[in-house]
Every structure is written in structure tokens, then in C-alpha cells.
Image (cartoon, rainbow over all chains, first blue to last red; front, side, top):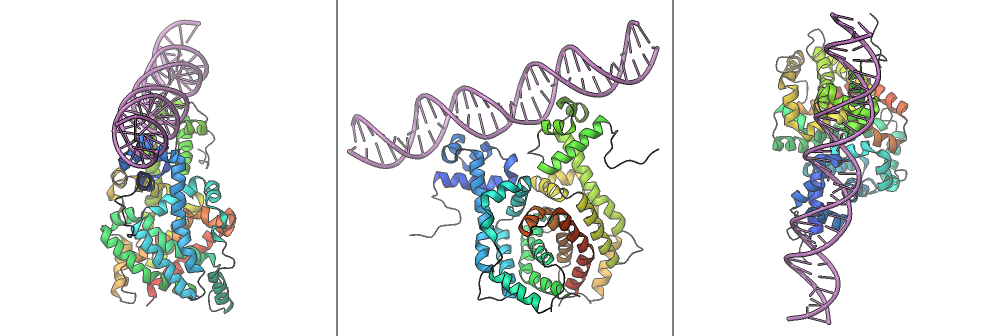
Length: 210
Length: 210
DNA sequence: TACTTTTTTAATCATTTGATTAAAAGATTT
DNA sequence: AAATCTTTTAATCAAATGATTAAAAAAGTA
């Protein structure tokens, strides 16, 4: 059995259509994507989309679900690892996300958009169970840290927001940032690579502030 | 002459349509918005949209331009004020943006989306001149600070990204954040109010790190 | 090979959607 | 009041779009 290549050359028609749809949907969003765009991108006939996936919406749901799982699933292993410290978890999470975002820079805006378009729908489809963070290792560790009183009394939600903001937002704003700064894609990605080490330091500095 | 109220009750038909369009466009984006949605939201006949604005796209362009001006124009006064320190400018900018975002939480995602959909188009329409930051007061002050060597040697673009990320991203992620944390809109806005003071402190801490 | 099943295509359908038109309703001017 | 101009509406058009159909092409099976 050979390893699955990044872009499967001998993928089935169904998978090729799905990958084409993923590209078009993530680039243009649900509403702006025509089934004909997907057909063209995949190189197959328009009717095959409905032959394999019943409808544009069903195809979209599949892709959105996979995106969300890509975002959530891999993370659960990190946040619930009892063998790493809190600091290590933060570093691993940020590093993991930046790696993924460099490969898939369009995903955040895509996901944020569709959540915004209909929050209830998404929540129902993915299932709320996806993140019951009450008894996760990371939650316990944070509580322990807070108990030591060595950290600021600021609402911890702020630091969660800060971590996510510093990690994800640059990718969402990438087109403007690159245009305003004149950075190439490579230079931009190099900065993102730097942030793997920097963001944890910044977060630490923020937590210790005041 | 009486002062203009927030929601003009005696606004002209043209203005009412524009405001309806602003609401629908910012909520759903360009592609997902039907001219009929705008007609319904405004309470007027479909044909009036083209009577006053020629086309859906022209109407959209007007609104997008106003949004971008709201974002950029008011800021120029702050960043080019020679009477304030760099620290003061950062505080003013963040405070100013958070105020605006609390009032218009849908704008960032809307703008980011449309920039992503067609970066060139937007850049052309708004005009690149909008931000020639070379000889602005804030740029000079940053150079002075960098010259003192009291700050870290990290690429200053990081700190620009960080400031923007910490300020804007929570609004973009608001639906998920509120859902995951169980915060009400009021509680969320209260957190944003706190951030007016916190973000400048955090930025300061980050700049001084290492 | 002949038969069956699966995959793919071209053509077509029914709605939706942005836009136009002609006429009605309202306002302004003479 | 009559005439003219502006605003608004209902009806309609043409193109776009999601989906279906019937048949061709390909693959599998006897």
C-alpha cells in the first residue's frame, strides 16, 4: 500500500469533484460559488455533481464539516494531553495552527463567514459536543495556574481571545497586510513562522502584566 | 436646522434604500444578497433600487466605499497628530476602533470578505493614496522609538499585526466566542470595553519583551 | 460476445434573479 | 385646471443557475 500523495493523481471522480469544490467554496464562499464553477474546476460534467452529491448544499455541508473537523479534531489531542505543561500546550497549539494556516490560508475567513451567515445551522451540524472543555487537561492546568495567583486577575477569556486573535487574524487580513506592507507571500509566511515562537512569549508577557 | 438623528425618520427614499442595502449587504455579503431582499428591507418596490442606483453593483460600491472611509478617514486625524505621543496614539486608535466596532460589529467580516473576493478591485476603487504612511507623525515617532534601542529587534510589522488582531478579531469571531463561552451580547461588549485599556498595556508588554 | 450495471454527457427544465418597461400615482409648475 | 415632471408600482424580460432526464460511453460480468 503506497502513501497517499498530497494531490491524489489517481483519485476517484467523486474525490476530484470534492477537492475542486473545496477549492472553489473556500475561495469564493457558498453564495458566490456556482455549481458550474465546481464542474469547470474539476473538469467533469455539471450533472456529475448532483450524481455524486445530490445537491450543491449537501456537497457544501460535507466540505464545511471536514474543515471544522480539521480545525477541532487535531486540537483535542493536544489540549487533553496530561503529559505536557500548559505552556507546552499553548506552544504546540499555536505551532500546529500556523502550520495548517500556511497550507490553508483561506479556511479561517471561509469558516467565520459561514458561521456568521447562520450560526445555529453550523452549531447543529457540527454538534455542540465538539468542545466540552470542562474536564480537559488544559482546563485543569489553567485553574491550577490561576490558583497560584501569580497571574493577573483579568478575565481569562481575554487571553483565550488574544491567543486565537494573534494566531488566526494575520491570515484573515493577509491580502491587506501584504498589499500595505509590500510583502510577498513567502515573506509573509516567514513572518508567520516567526510567530510560532513569538506568540507564546507574548502571551506569557501579557499574562504576567500588571 | 435640527440635528440628524441616528435613524433618520424623514430620510429620502434614496437614503432609506441605501440604509436597507447597508444592513442586508453587511449581514449577508454581496453574493448572498438579492436585490429583492433590499427592496423588502426598505419597504419599497424592487424597481426603485435601479431607479436610484442603476444596479446592485453600483449600490454595493457606494456602501463599501463608505465603510472603508469610515474605517480609514477618521483614523488619519489620529495617526498624523503631532501633539500626541506614540503611546497616546495607540490608545486613541484602539479606543476609537472598539467604539466603532461595538456599534457596527458586522463591518470587519464584510470588508475582509470583499477584499478577499477581489483584492485588486477594492484597492483600485478606494485608491491606494488612502494610506501613504511614510511621512505620518506616527511613523516618525515609531522610528524614534526604534532608534532608542529600548525595544525588541523584532520586525515592527508584527506589532502592527498584533494591535490590529487584538482589536478587530474578537468582533469577527464574536458568534463563536459568545456561543462557546455563553456570554450575552452585553457581556461581550463589556469585555470589549475593558480591552480599550488592556490592549495598549499588552502591546507595551509585548514590545518590551526580551 | 451479449448482457447488465455504472459512469458520464448533452440537452433541457423550472426557478431565481438583476434589470427594464409602461403606466399609474403624486408633486410641481404654468 | 391643465400640463409637465418626478416618483412609484406591477408586469415582464432575459440571463443565470440548481437540478433532472434520457441517452451515450465505459466498465464489469456471464
